[in-house]
Image 1 (cartoon, each protein chain N blue to C red):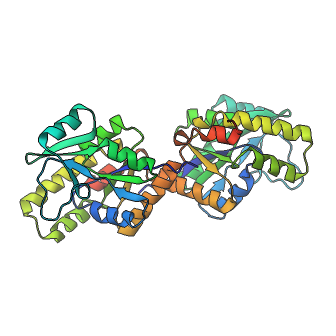
Image 2 (image 1 turned 90 degrees about the horizontal axis):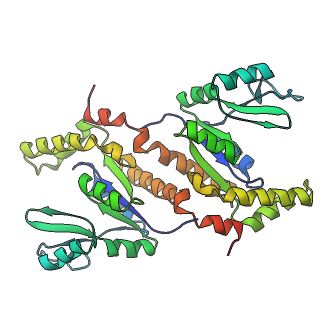
Image 3 (image 1 turned 30 degrees about the vertical axis):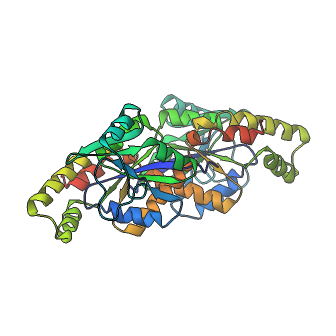
Length: 202
Length: 202
C-alpha cells in the first residue's frame, strides 16, 4: 500500500480549534506543519527555516514569478505564502504535511494541487463557536461579531471541501483526521502502481 | 455528523478472502450483507428473505422492467440481482450495506448509484493468491489457472475502484474498511445539511 506522504489542508473559523488539533496531530512524527515564506521581519526568537522562511520582497516576488508558491496572500502589508518545494520534499519523505490556511487560499491550492485533501474543522454549532470566542476574553464584542459573520460565510462553502470534521473534542478530531489520512492513502487513484505489483509485472 | 447508512461494494479475485472479511465486518451490528433476489430454486434450509429473495422468472423480469434492481446477472441459467428497495430501506436505517459482487456488476452499480463506495479487496500479490487457491484443495489446476488469469484482468481495472484494501490479515482488512466507512461519512458531499445546522438556519 502507498505510504507516500500526503498534503492536508485544515481550515475553519477562528475558534474552531485548528491550532490545538494540529498540535495533537504533530505528536505523531509522521505529521508536520508546513513552514510559510514571509516578507515580515523576524520577531524575537523566530528562526529562519523553523518558524518561517524569511524573504526579502524581491525574493518573494521571484517565488511568485517562478510558480514556487502554492498560494500566497498579503496581511497588513506583509506577504505570506506556502513554498511548493518545501511541501514536495516532505511529501517525498512520507510526511503528512499540514497547511493551516484560510478558505480562499485552500481552494487555490486545491486547484493547482488536486491531490491535496481539504478538511474543514468546525465547532458543532454557532453557539459553541460564540462561547469559545467569548472564552478567549481577548477580543472586543465588535471583533467577535465580525468573526461570527465571517464563520457563517465560510460555512457557505464547506461543500467545496473534501471532509468536514466536527471538533467537540481535540482527541476525537485528531483521531478523525488520522482516519481520513489513512483512508485517503488507500484510494485507488493514489495506488495505481499497485496494479503492476499485484500482477507481478516488471 | 452524518450517521446515515452507506452502500459499500466489496469485489476482488477469488481467493482474496472477501467472505471472511465480510464475516468479520458483520460482527459489528451496523454492517449487513445485502440479500440478493434470485430465480434459482431454494436449497435445503434456505429461507426466503434470509438467504435470498426467491422470485419466479416473471417476478424477476418485472423487477428488471421497473428498475428495481441495482444490477443483475445470469449464472448457469439462474438470475441473481440486488434489489434497490431493500438496499435503500437499510441505508435509511443507518446500516452499512455490503454488496459482495464481481467487478462488472460493481461498476454498473456505481453508474446508477454514485454514492456507493467501491472497495477492491486483494491479496498482497499473485504468489499469495496462488497459494491461497492451492490451499483450498478443492479446485483443479485448470480452474486455478483460470482464476489467476481472471484476477490479472481484474487488477487491470482497479483504478475504477474508490479504494484498494490489501488483505494480509482479516482483522486489519476489516479495520481498514471500517476506517474507509468512517472517513466517507465525514465527506462534505454527504453532509451538505450541516451547513444549515452550523449556521443555525431553520
